[in-house]
Length: 265
Image (cartoon, rainbow, N blue to C red; front, side, top):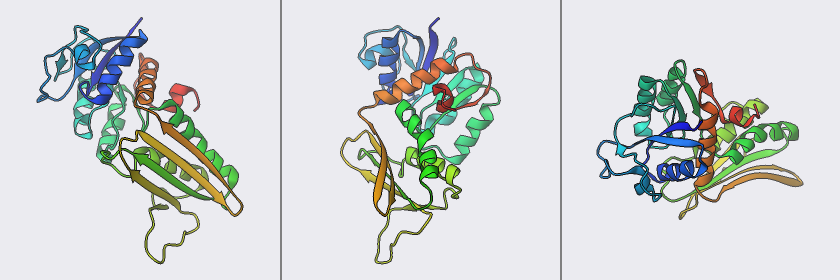
């Protein structure tokens, strides 16, 4: 039976792609499309706004009834409303919005006592496989290998470094005994900028319309190993979120991970 899906942030770029790919998959019945209360397209058919033709679901500002899972790709300012709406209607939540503050992550954890939630800094299937590998590789290579992380995104990305880059660093720290985030060095400059043993360099690049590139560089005296991921477009994040929504349907309350969705944890 199709998963009854509600999309929060439905009028945004990611929301429209969710509408497209969810409709295309045949695994979902879209029962709600939500955006902020001042959006100029409120009341218009969400499918028409997404370019897939009318689906009989208007863009609204309030939570409709009948949903099983919400996918949120809005803005950090809309996250708390998404949590409250899911708690009120007792439906599961896939949180794809990035750049959350610590207090917002704490609210997600608290809400997970009542509803099923998946939250990750990156919904891409490939990136979540990389998350599972980077710490293991660092552990296998040992302390003689320096570790640097680079991330490249489009010119409009607000947060830096990306949440994905920080998650990569966090996974490495967990496997190698480094203290996160104290061991991180954000870029280097000046005449006395020699690399310190045990640190992880994190470097952010912003240019043009690059969707997302992340690399983890392990370097020793004599060789370099690089693990990298490139997002060609936003669809890989959408497909990961849809996969998570199908998996989350009917789950008991709790905080789940993409690793669990993929069966790698």
